[in-house]
Image (tube, rainbow, N blue to C red):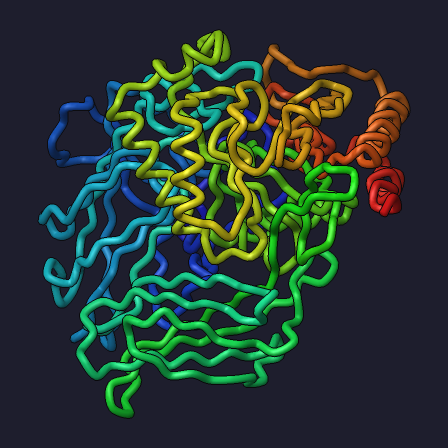
Length: 589
């Protein structure tokens, strides 16, 4: 194909094995929103025109070349590999033709995520603007479409770490524990036809104690007599029950003797939601859910522990940055996206802490399907440098101005609402180590109002304000027992430990700055030290520890403290030995 001949990933850094599986005519072709699925859609991933212009440019007449969407412009997979400066603006352009059978329907333009400030035009008409780099957004473009060829133009501004917006570990000058920046489109762009009356969103809340699930649905342009039909199926699509309600009702449906979801048995029910007018079906979506409960329980020793489905389950996970040497924020393929979850579980972990990044919806879908627990961080902002941290708990409040705080709350709510239905997510982590930390008590209250069904780790490491459900400390390399007296009515967690490093030649990022907490010369020595960490963890579990998170699953750029190399080609500890060590933690109860 012509496109295949002109597209070449930039090879000045590591590439993963999945590069060879990319179809440049349709990269990442999978349906991007598995929690709310319709039959018809059009994927706009592929080649777009691009241009980098001065920040104050208001329109462009020519382009610099072509970029492969949705890989960020800084990445090798984009075919461009250029940095976007805060003084610059990134432009995208392409054409599309709608299928004939979409006529008479609304057409929604969806973006999985674009970093950071996005403006959109259809056929020269301004459609809208969005700020935020980690959550999906959409626009109704129906009134701007032509019968034949249509044009879409996008401009993007991204201050990265020179701004105070949420940007995670992105840096314009990556070093140590901060990494290459990501700008522009980095998740799937797609079109979807919907009727005038359609389901915009819904929220599913399981209640295993009362054997029920609550469903709240948002419907656009309903009429008075419209009904919502709900059908629930087992995992083999055998119908279990159906229910019809009014559109605006909060519906509670009983599920007798529910099959519970857990890492050992990730059972998922199927659900169909349908808008009906008289006997006519207007809109229909497919989704799924798991029946599970996450809560705290006080033991006979007076210590609070985290329980899954009313039973204590020690959670042992990895810190997962979600970075790729070739796609940076964007996994090369859906199989690559699945890989890190699969290998984490195969190595004997039952949890992942998704670290200061939000993944595409399909990542959480794979966690739901495979059965791994997720602690979800907010992508913190307000931090430009590891040395620019609050020096005490009083100073942290002054590090953010009011507009930046409001932006945080807006994106926090968007993250929680977008990820609410994913069964695997059990803990929200609003702040990491004081990075951009502010209003901790108020932020915790906000999260609890948005989602009372999950636990909150209000601050992972550093500045603890005694709120939330978890008292979380960071200790490298050896895990340490948190102070039970400081925990009060919270669970005890070591949110980061480990960081044991091993350099594997020909599998490292090309940088002179390497970072680890403890470095080892070979796999044998690394394995022995890791075994000592596991032995220490066992004593902590016996003393009341609920969870521990090892740094980290893969190397990331200059960090060489991963269990896997950055290209995912080598596991630094023998796979069977590593699994046996990890699984021994679960023999204690």
